[in-house]
Length: 153
Image (cartoon, rainbow, N blue to C red; front, top):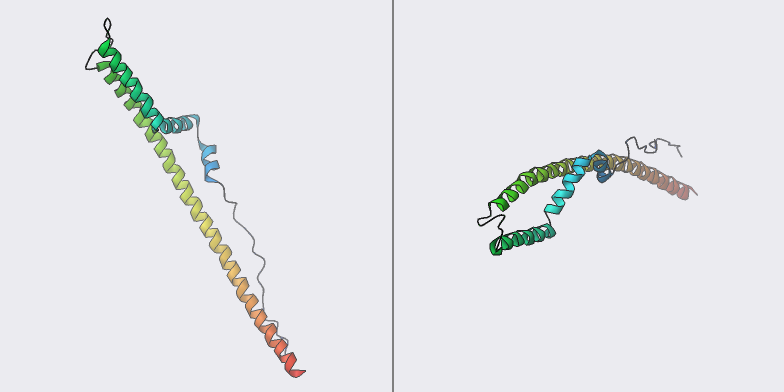
């Protein structure tokens, strides 16, 4: 019986990478007051609540100016209302674009985070497969030695 110790078990896997961080936490840390306000305004303007409130307000404005007996501050065709709506649109569009740009940055951060997690997982899976293959070889050798012992006994 020969003593064959040709197995070299790998060192235990060591995590050399930094821990994965939650993208939401990273975005929250990096956002400024203006960024948070743009996000809140974009969320508010993109809601049914905003549409309903604005529709009620504009209807009320039009009704008051159509049926007012003494004082029309904005007579038909509602030039002042048109100006107010234009100003709202002039400010809403850049605010919504700022929020969209932040969402784009967040999406890129999340994609980078996913890539990093995938690379780390691949590294760990390789180490596990290597360790498992060596264990399989060791088990086959143990089985062969046991078989030799049982035959010689």
